[in-house]
Image 1 (tube, rainbow, N blue to C red):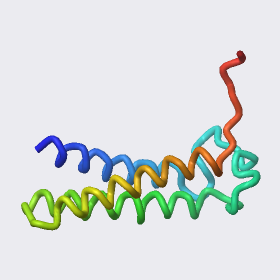
Image 2 (image 1 turned 90 degrees about the vertical axis):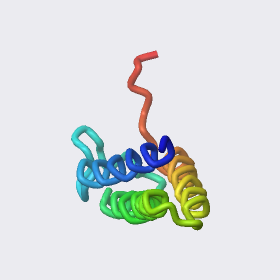
Image 3 (image 1 turned 180 degrees about the vertical axis):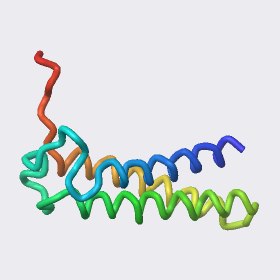
Image 4 (image 1 turned 90 degrees about the horizontal axis):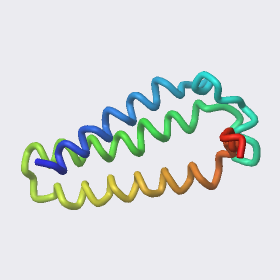
Length: 101
């Protein structure tokens, strides 16, 4: 049940991230944050977040909900996709330190 809640939360988060990020970026996110990345706008990162992260989490959620034998596989795929997304964010996007320290 807990895994179902976590995957559901990840689906909602991926959708919200897609809507918030959008093609122009989130409010306050400048295009220079993408400097050095293969992206010129926030459109493709938003699409990747929605399709890859949200899609795999949704597959895992549905398989868990239906108690399918493949639920463990799809949950692992979704977790792996999420970890890759987080690593890619850290490596590709430059967000300056705004803490003042």
